[in-house]
Image 1: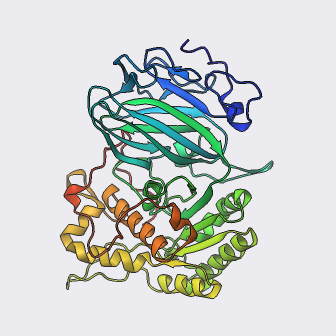
Image 2 (image 1 turned 180 degrees about the horizontal axis):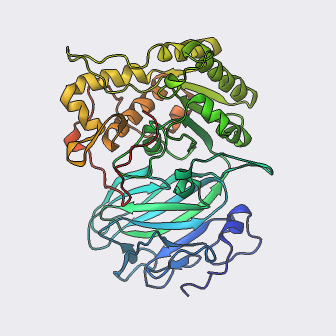
Image 3 (image 1 turned 90 degrees about the horizontal axis):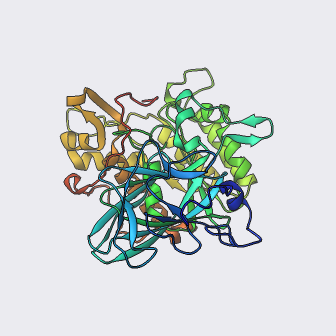
Amino acid sequence: MKGTLAFISISLALLTACTAQKPGVTNQGTLKFDFGTGKAAKGYIAVSPETIYSAEKGYGFDLGTKPEAIDRGGDVLKGDFVSAETPFYFSVKVPEGNYKVTVTLGDANEKTATTIKSESRRLMLENVQTAPGEFKTETFIVNIKDRKIDENTTVGLKPRELTKLDWDDKLTLEFDLKTAVNAIEIQKVEDQVTVFLAGNSTVVNQDEEPWASWGQMIPRFFKPGVAISNHAESGLSLGSFIGSRRLAKILSIMKPGDYLFVEFGHNDEKEQGPNDGAYKSYSERLRTFANQVKNKGGHLVILTPTARRSFGEDGKMRNSHGDYPDAAKKVAAEFNVPLIDLTTATTTMYEAMGVEGSKKAFVIYPELNLNDNTHFNTYGAYQIAKIVATAIKDQKLPIAKYLVSMPPFDPSKPDVFANFNWPPSPKASKIKPDGN
């Protein structure tokens, strides 16, 4: 009967395997949700549009959204589902860790198209289509993090981060396009390679439209086997990333074989102390990353900073990062760690787009009085994520085996802007992220 398991502790079910079988929770600690108003499938928790999230219940539709239920009859799991004409959110209260999420999508009568984002607009699935009567099961990995480092220490968050979905105690999924969600299964898993991301506003999971980063797009290009844990934040330099205990947080949960991708430079350039500079504090802090990640048995990947959109009168891009890309390359060579040259790749891409065409990759919207030549919109961020994914494959990093199948991306031939389809999320802001 629907709603009979509201008393089950969601967190406890995911932390430990159940010794006795209970509806909705398998003996592997998997939570299984059946959506709609019909009878729930055996072993599933029933979720109707009236199932609104609360901390006490531990699951439900969230953030003021409420889809509609449709019942086609027939199969108990796939005959009914939830859908909506606008994005809706479903949340489950869970502890920190990596979670395998499996969704069943489809409608017996109509075609569907589903894009799924997790947490703060991380792209997980893109435009998954089903024909009438066709059903698809898709699986992806969502990383959940919290502020705790040890009993006495936490990550120093900025005020704007205190309300981000990335830092709360829930796993939140956003469903977009014309979707039909039949079922969701969520299982805590320990066998994933975790790829940690450290960086600034060009890497962070941007909460609000139209802002975006490559860090929130890259999950879409990985199959299960890799979890992306994004610890970047707008406005940070290597120094402030370390100072706010974000590196300490990563190291506290890093396992041997995990990765840390680090991209800084934009904000480091503004530090003007006597010991600052590309070959001083910036290089020394990168060495700190390299040494500490090595001590944990992890793998460091250094990325040069994404280029700012800065064209000269000759229509060619100008270097806006000075010696910082060179310094990053030298540290990567010194420690024999992989380097992804985003400065060169993004410079090539913007020049290929042209002075006017490159505006389509940035938050440049004169009608909204937005003219930002540093921060990307969703199209630009998606292109850069493709650059990163292609570099992982080209450099034969071990995690390349977990990449989805995709043609190699050539930054001199970016995707046609008109063909890019991104269903906007509800949250939007004209406030520029910290940093430039």
